Picture 1 (cartoon, rainbow, N blue to C red):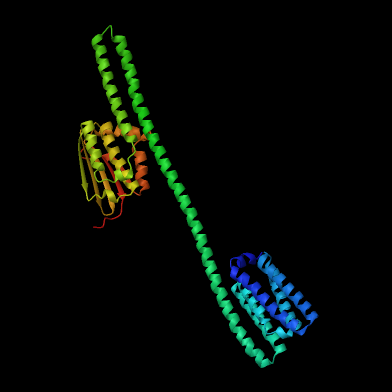
Picture 2 (tube, rainbow, N blue to C red):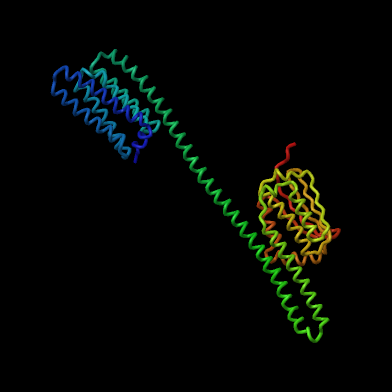
Length: 404
């Protein structure tokens, strides 16, 4: 099916010009017929132009097979020839209709068939002119129409190229909008998944840590209750142990609640954010902490990079205190050669660190989620004992090179 209607509707000026041209030629031919006072000629003109306009409307307003479009163009050529014989006095204006039909054909077919139809219309113009005027004049006038049709063809090709470029631009814009919508949806899903994973991890830590402490606390309080009358001294020791467990449970809850607090990206990209984190952690736990930054451009990080870096340092501090009972933690952030390297080094007990941290990782906590965060940014994460003692958590994230 060939949808010429859509092509012509996209060129409303061409649509209007076709009817205007037909009306002008019909008006001129009708004036000649009225001057001759020939009712038969007037009737013939009415029939020819009526049929011509009807076929023209079908061509420009109805979707139809290609073979039928070609057939209607042939019918239009025959009707123009009939106009020559119906009103010989106006035959000089009839070729204008063939030029108009050539323009429609140029907008209706591909480049090769456009040339074929251009030749057909030129042959008809030469032939009809040769019937009513001398051959030398017919050739001269025909040469003029060759130039006119060639110009019309060039204009049609230019307009078609512009239409194709606009259609391609609209298609690409639509594809880009769909891609942007998919990207926004993917980013939203990734963010939601990251939040859900973080909440799940924190919920597990709260449940396991607090649940463990409360279970032990319940056992010790029951023992103290049974020993209260028989062995008050031992009962007092059990109560004191219970108080220690409560204190540890409260400390774990504080850590979990602190981790649940949202830190906005601008805060995380504050050059002092990591220094404050390390300092506050040392003040809260009594562990000696030290922070060092070398060529570190916190403000130049993306929100995702800043957030991940913050979590790496936070996780390293928590693990050193929770799993290895470290008394000193050194944190360093070095930015060089297009990479950002963050190291958290402690002097804790290797055996405790490996056992406790290995159990947490097997349960899906801590390092597993942290490694996923780092790898999403194209980086690497490692956690291992140091040869000289203690434990090191190390993350490397690719970043843009600083420009001084």
